[in-house]
Each structure stands twice: as structure tokens, then as C-alpha cells.
Amino acid sequence: MDIQLGRGKKARRAYGIDEIALVPGKRTLDPSLADTRWNIGNIEREIPIIASAMDGVVDVGMAVRLSQLGALGVLNLEGIQTRYADPNPILDRIASVGKDEFVTLMQELYAEPIKPELIEKRIQEIKQQGGIAAVSATPAGASKYGEVVAKAGADLFFVQATVVSTAHLSPESVTPLDLAEFCRSMPIPVILGNCVTYEVTLDLMKAGAAGVLVGIGPGAACTSRGVLGVGIPQATAIADCAAARDEYYQETGKYIPVIADGGLITGGDICKCIACGADGVMIGSPFARAAQAPGRGYHWGMATPSPVLPRGTRIRVGTTGTLEQILTGPAVLDDGTHNLLGALKTSMGTLGAKNIKEMQQVEVVIAPSLLTEGKVYQKAQQLGMGK
Image 1 (cartoon, rainbow, N blue to C red):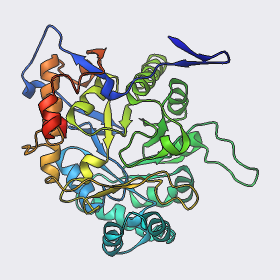
Image 2: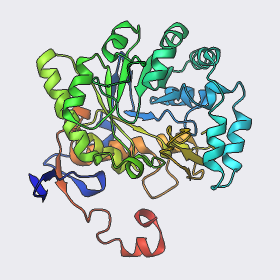
Image 3: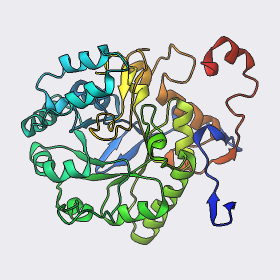
């Protein structure tokens, strides 16, 4: 329903993940029977969770271990890992600098040129250890390094920017990346994003995307919504983009997964995204808290080091456990940030959803008080949901 902002402008109400709740139906099932498998490109994974392509989240070791656990990690090809042969001293500097010096330090460190030989080396390091080599670049980076990525034998290529569309206008001196041609020419599946609307999702799928990333600005370290004023809350964005996926499937018989990207902290957040229509999720800060994460207890966004308009910050997330505890348990925290797979399976059991497709069909209600109702003591004592 449209809302009139004023005489010359109408708006549509959009909802965030915190504003909705999932409703149990007539059936329940044992969580062990919940099938969480999904497909992205030509790869099947047991866990529909992807670690974000951020320098504080994924390095070679994290990508390999996530693959072994049944999930997926995406390596940023325009970050620290491909600018420095030994990224460890650089990551130490990022973790040790004060907050007032952080942005200028990042701009200095990320001014170091990307080295194509390091792109090839990182991909090969992941593959040699038996991991799935999923990598990410901006459209400009994809245009420049696409051949290197393909030659190195990557398995999946994520082309990501704050907003990606097939109708990008550039100055006459600049040739924009033709997304459809790029998808056709690459020998590996290409995932495109980010977007938040039905129309753009449909366009990206028609261009040949093997998956579409949904989300603009909800990430824990992202400041795009404050800097640019752009974005749609995730519950509405996912539902709109999932509708485009279903329309595309009806028209072509090709099922292209929709991936909710950003703003997800707990197992409950992941469950609600899938109930809104997502096939999988991409998360950053929850994995940045793993003992194996490269960020040393810090997390920062991909647009943080922009030399002209930084759209991210560095946040302290701490280290709360191993990657295994965060992803598959056993949990030692009571706030929903450990054993994300267990949370998804238990939620599916409670809702009676046998698989991801059934989870996408569960009833959703608008519930702004879901996370606060009856939680006075937790909030006062900063325990559980009150942290």
C-alpha cells in the first residue's frame, strides 16, 4: 500500500528482518530430518551460508575450512590478500591503529597495486588444499582480472558492488562491463549483485547470473545507507527479489538462487531471510568473530578504503569461538551467534519445513515487538537477547 509523503511523492512501506516473525504451522519435524542443501552455480552445499568477501572475514585458510564444513567462503580479489605477498603484517597494522587514524591508514594500504600473480596464487592455494575457490571483484575488477581468474581455475566468480545493474551509464571515455557478455564468456558460474528490486533481479538473471545477491547497506560495518541514503530493508528486498526469481523460473525453467547479503547476525536472522524467499545467505561479522578469521577481532566493509568517499568503518567484533562453533556448534553462547546450522535446522523442525523450498513458504507476520517482548531482565542484565 502506498503512503503519501506529501503532495508530490508517494512511498511504499518496507520491512526489516527485526520487524517480522515466523509462524509455526500444523506440522513439526525432528531437526535431524531438515534438509538444508542448496545449489549455487554447479556446486551443491549442505549449508546455505556464505562467508562475505571481506578482508577481515575470509583468507585462504578460512575459505578451505568453510568448504570442508559444507559451507562456502568468498575471497576478495581487490583486497589485502592480492596486494601483499604476506598480508599478516598489514592485518596487524589494521588491528592496532586508533579509530581516528583508521580511514587514512586503509586508504594508504589499499593504494598498493593489485598483483595478478597473487590472484592466481591465492586461487591455487585454495584449490590445492581441497577448498572451493569462490572469489569476488567489483565490475571494474572483473573486467580487468576475469581472464586471470578463469585461468587460475576458480570455481565461482562473484561480481559485486554497492549497486549493480545491466543499465549502467558511463562517461564516453569509460567502457562499462557488459554483464551479459561477461557471464557468457566466463567458463565458470558468475554471481551478480548487489540489488534490492524485482526489476533489477530479473535483468541480472536474464543477463546470465548464476545467482543474485540481495542487500544494499545492511552490513554491520557498512555505512552506505548513512552516506548515500540508499537501500531497502532486507525482508522486503528479499521478498521482491525472490518473486523475480520465481517469475524467471516460470518463464525459462532455470532456477537462479537468491542470496540475502548483509545485516544478519544470529541464526534467527538467517531463518527469517530464507522464510522471506532467500535460497542462501551471505554473512560477514558473525564469521569475523571466529578464532581463525584474519581480522584479529575486527571487521570492515569492502568500500571502507575508498580514496574519495569511504562507505564503511572498522568495528570491533571480538573473538567468541572457533569457526566450527559458530557454524556447526556446539554453541557456548546463548545469543544465537553460535551453531548457525543448528539454529536453521531447529527452526525448520519447529516450522515443519523439510527443506529450503518448504522453509520459503512458511507464514510470516509483522512483529516489531518480537525481540523485546518479555525480555526486560535480559535487556537489563545484558544477557541472551539483551546483549
